[in-house]
Amino acid sequence: MNHGYLAMLLVVTTVSWSVTVSAKSSVFWENLTVSKTVHLKKHIKKNRSRTRWAASRGSKITARYQEKIKKTEPKTKEAKTKKARSCSRVKQAQQLPKNCVKKTRSTRSGIVSQIKYLKSLHARKNAKARYANYQNVGNRHLLGTARSLLNWFDRGGTISDDFDLHRLGVNTEKVKYTGYFTPSLSARKYPNNEYRFPIYGAPKNGHFPTRGEIFKGILRGKGLEIAWTNDAMAYYEIQVQGSGSLSYPNGKVLQLHFAGKSPAKFIAISRYMQKKGYIKRPSASLVKNWMKKNPNRVEEVLAANPRFVFFSLSKRGRSQKTASGRPLIAGHTVAVDTRQIPFGSVLLAELPIRNAKGKVTRKEWRLLFPQDRGGDIKGTKRLDLYTGRGDRAKRLTRAVTGMGRAYLLTNKTARSRSRIRTAAR
Image 1 (cartoon, helix red, strand yellow):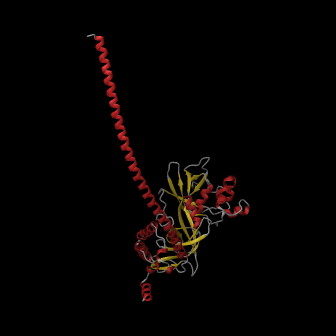
Image 2 (cartoon, rainbow, N blue to C red; image 1 turned 90 degrees about the vertical axis):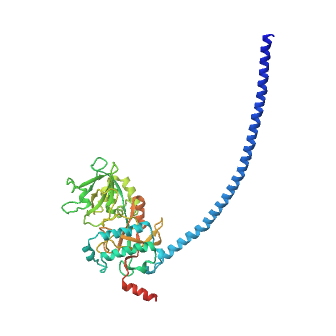
Image 3 (cartoon, helix red, strand yellow; image 1 turned 30 degrees about the horizontal axis):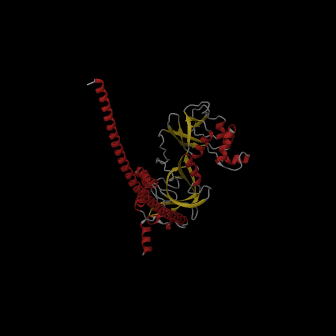
């Protein structure tokens, strides 16, 4: 047989077989693909129906939930508003409903703080302590009161059932609430071209010069500079507050504590600026803006207030302590005249609540804790409430300013309890 013919026949046969196999293979894969596609389409269709059902079900549930919230929210707001109004209208604190006194974690922390303070006092001092307006109130009595208040906080109840309320002031007289906060000041240990305003410690000879005398250099070269700052106005603000904190470039924070003041009378610089025609009305924002635009007149304006406050530095870091040695509690720590109101006591206070326009919209009953003192606070007619740190706290100082009632709380005596039982019968 011719070898060429055989070779040609083999090639033709191989090609024919390849075509057949290829055709069968393509049919197989086509069928498989079609089968998978059909199955996938069925699966998608099935899941789509389930998804649509779940979505419709979910939307119905969500719609019902939202509808429920919409129905509930007005009732909740209305109830809160109604409660706030009813608490604001209470004429006698002895008739104050149990839910009217605001309770927060800070309230409980404050009560515990007062207990710790009173327990730390020496036994002899504890037994002898008496105060001008409350001759029968010693530290032991205050400790018992604070412990009873902790029980009251945990179990609830009407505050007048367990405590006697001693009104601050005379008869129907109200006290004035003001606020103070912790401002922060950028500082350096040594002066430079930017940080050129000295922060002074108290003179050792006991002579406290006026601001004008200090600006003229009476303290220069005496080594009383404890730090330097670049912001004269912020430093003045700290002097008005009586305390603050210093922030250094390395992240260190030191506390400024009141160390003394010149005996001169305090004069508001905003009044001076209004009188001079620098600003149209007394306003913190107007004062600040004018100072920025007129840096060369800052000393002239600040000198209008002759009172100068001196400070000492504390290395306790960020934790700021009160005059009683206890930590400050924003919204509850209050500075008082300790000749009249003792550290460790607890006050029931009616605080004014103002809206954004400065109008008093309601009153809020809250427990305050006398833990600090202020140089300008004399007697029981003024209470200075600590509002916290930073700009928000600064705004809150204006929001709480106003008149309201205040009571010192003590445990009910046996005689008081017997009267209540008799009245109940």
